Length: 137
Image (cartoon, rainbow, N blue to C red):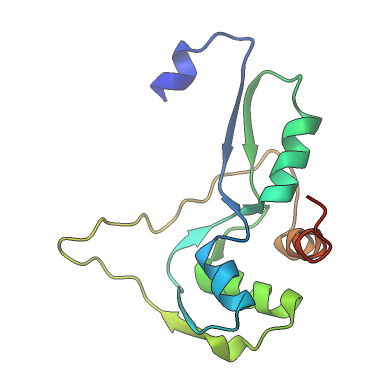
C-alpha cells in the first residue's frame, strides 16, 4: 500500500478489523433481535478491548502489525460463537448468502488477514463479555 511505503521507518502501522458494542451483530444479538448473517463472507475480527491491549503492548514497535483473531470465520460462524459465549438463542441468526445486487456497494467475500498474534475467537469473545458486563472502561 502506498501509505505504508511513504511513512518513515519509525512508525507502527496497524491493520485490524475490530468489533465492539456498536457492531451490528453484537448490538442486535445482545438485544435478542433476529439478524441475517452471511455464510459466505469471511473475516477474522478482534474485540476492541483486545485491540487496545495489543496497541499498548506493541506501542514501541515499528513496522507493520496485523492484529486479528487467528482463524478465518464467516459472519454466521461469528454470530454463532457470539450466541454461545453470551448465552443467546442461535435461532436468532438467519443464515444468509451474500449475492451482489446492482446499485449496492459490493462486499469482498473475504477480508481475512494473517495475524501477527495468536488469539482464538472464543477466547476473545469471552474476554469481551467480561469487559462489557463488568464495565472495565
